[in-house]
Image (cartoon, rainbow, N blue to C red; front, side, top):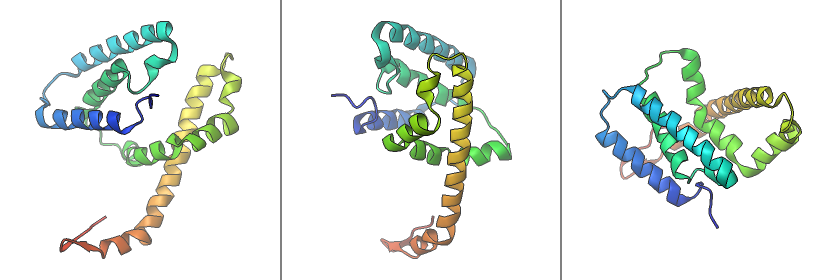
Length: 170
């Protein structure tokens, strides 16, 4: 039984690829190559999904992994100095953790957003974009308050702990 790319093996593979990119990537590479590869990979994934159904969209499918790496490479070379973008980027991992849990995902998509009612609707695409925006904003706000809470309660306690005669600073 496959874990769909959510398991430890895929994590180690992607972590290793990220480490390799960090060590050996030429930062002067042009984004146009990554964009073209991303477009080709996306089309390839789509064509595979027609033939092999949903298995082509899983995180352990090679074209999805390559597409993700290309997106990473595209955005790695872009520098943004926007307070709004940096605010939401700061909480991206929290958004992922909050809405990535199976029970939370089911509660959000089936219970709150009623996504199953929009599958064959003319409003499907609009519903997707509004849903994504709402999920990101709400989860960012939740993580913002978690961050504030930890800043004044948990972090001061952790900062007093010493490991191997070195202070942990959070």
